Length: 494
Image (tube, rainbow, N blue to C red; front, side):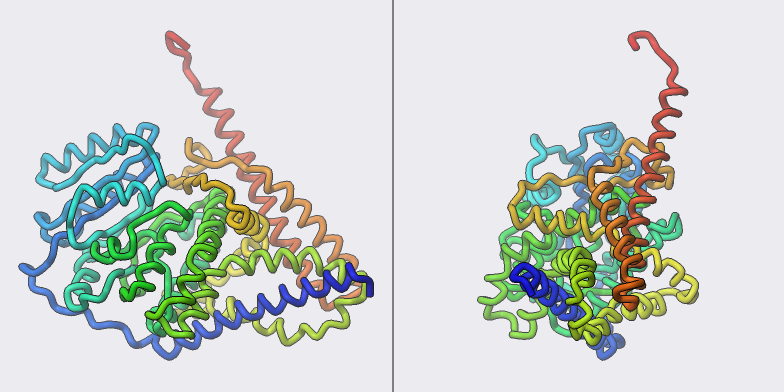
C-alpha cells in the first residue's frame, strides 16, 4: 500500500469511527428519552396577582408578509395586559418598517405597551437587536419570538410559573411545531427532522441532566440569567447556542417543555433551506471553538455533561465526515482497500437516526405511519445538503466574517412570486458533480463491491434530488419574474 493510499485509508477509518460515535450519542439520547419520557414537570400554581412583568422581544428583518400574523398572536396572549411590554425590534430595509409602524400605532391606541424600535445601524444582526432592546427595559423575564412563529394564547401561563418557583431557572424553551408541514415534500421532511430533534434529543438532554441549547425563539429567559452570562453577542451566527451554553456553565438551569408547542413556518424553498442549514452549521461550529475550553474547565457540570456537551457542539462535524466518506468510498473500493476493512458493525450505528424519527412521529401524530412517506425525502435532503453544511463548517474554521442570509418567510405559500425568494447559487454545480460521481461509483460497485450499491444509490438520489429541486424551483422563479415583467403597466416616469 502506497503512503498516499495509507493516508486515505486512515482518514476513512477516522471518519467512519467518528460517525459511529455521533450515532451512538443519538442512541444515548434515545435511551434517556425512554427512561424519562413520562417525567414531565408539573406546572406550579401562581396567583394572578403574582404574575410578573414580561418583556416580549420580536426581532424582525424584512418580514412584511408575516409580521401582522405574529402581532395578532401576541395581543391574544392570555396574560395580564398591564404586565406585558412588546418590543418590535425592526431592522427592516423595505416596506415592513412602514407596515409595522402602522400596526404598532393601532395597538398602542388600544392600550398595548408596544414599541417599534429602529436602530441607527443594523450591527450584530439579531443578537445586536435583542441586546439593544434590553437596554431600554428592565422587565425580569424576556420572551422571544421570531417573525414566523405563532405563540399559542396560553404560552406565558404554561412557562412563567416555573421561574417563580425555581430561582435558579434561567431558560424555558417550548417545542417548535409547524404551520405549513404539508405544503410540499421539502417542508414535510423538515418537519420530521425538527420533530426528531425536539421530541427525542431535546427531551432526552434536558430530563437526562445534559447541556442543551436554546433554539433561538419560542422561549423565555430570566433577565438576570442573560446579564450574568454576558448578554447576547454576534461573535457567532448561532447566538442562541452561545448564550445558553454560557448560562449553563454559570450554573443556571434550563427547562424544556415538549408539550408547549409553538407553530412556525418552514422554508418551502430548497435554496432557503440550504442557506439556513449552512448558517446553523457555521454558527454551531464557531461555538465549538469558542466554548469547548470553557466546557471542560467548568466546575458546574459533570464529566458526562462535558462529553455530551462536546458532542452537541460538534453536531455538524458528521456532515464533514459524511462528505469525506462519500469522496473516499469509490477510491478505496477501486483499489481493493475497502473490501478488507471490517466496517459492518459500524453500520448498525446508522439505525439511530431513523429510529429517532419514527418514534417522534408516533409520539406526536395519530396518523404517524402515513407521515413516514416523507422519510425517503428526509434521507435525500440529509445526503444532499452535506456539501453546503460542510461549507458552513469550513467558514467557521477559516473564520470567514459573518454575513447572515435570512430565511425568507412567505405566509401564504406562494413563494415563487415573492420578492424574498432566494435564487439558486453556485453550490448546485458541486452537488451535480457529486451526484454524477456517486452515480458512476454505483455502476462500478456492480463489479467491485455489490454491497455498496444501496449506499451509492442513496447518495446519488440525495444529491440528484437537491439538484432537481433547485433547478425546478429556479425555473418557477424565472417564470414568476417573466410574468411580473409581462403584467407591468408603465406609468409616468418609468
